[in-house]
Image (tube, rainbow, N blue to C red; front, side, top):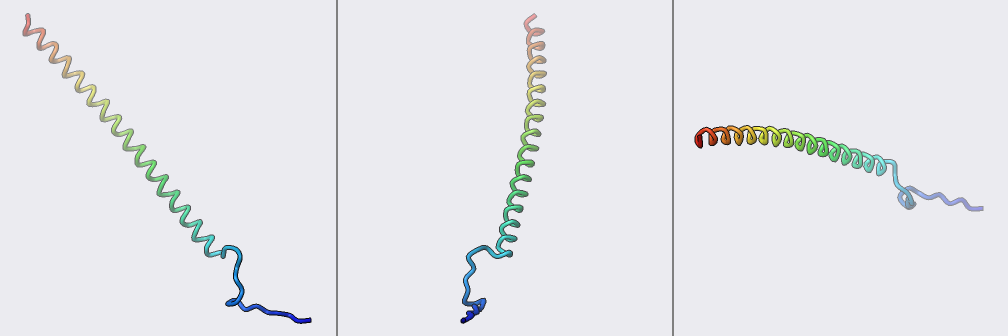
Amino acid sequence: MTISYHSNSQSKSSGFSFIEVLVTLALLSGSYLIIFSSQQFIAASIVRQERELKDLLQISDQHELEMALLNSEVDE
């Protein structure tokens, strides 16, 4: 009966080591945080742009009404 001992340098691992799994999880969680914060930034900027557009449209409507009233007074 012979017992063979394998040293760490000679044996090959067929799976992932714990540190590889930790690095992968760190990369995935970092990617998730970057994507989530980017989505939040884009959503906030879209809401701000919509608010600015509504304000500009109100100003434009008010200006058109003033011009229409001014032109109607000139025509009379």
